[in-house]
Length: 95
Image 1 (tube, rainbow, N blue to C red):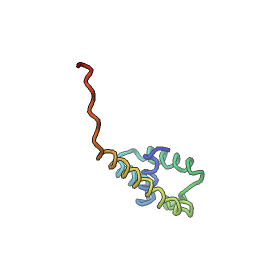
Image 2: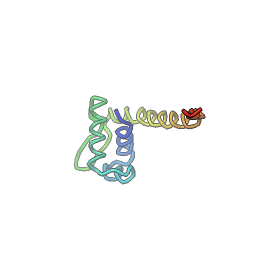
Image 3: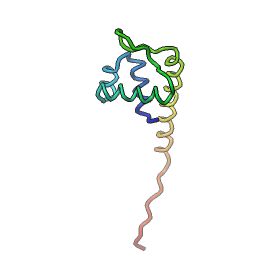
Image 4: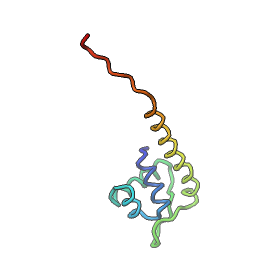
């Protein structure tokens, strides 16, 4: 699973449209749709009711959304924590 798929799912779930999510994420609409489909395959079920009114979270999607938001929060926390650690200086090969 790629974080981009989780981000796409959360964006579509909160914005209600792959087109709006694509604009927010900087991807094409088809790329967002593909990422959402990848995420659904990963979790093993559909997360949206798809109809003429667009995309609406189904019951599984409503259960998964807070978990996906937490995954993104933890990923951000991990990168923030790692970035705060001092990096070891490269050793010079010429001594």
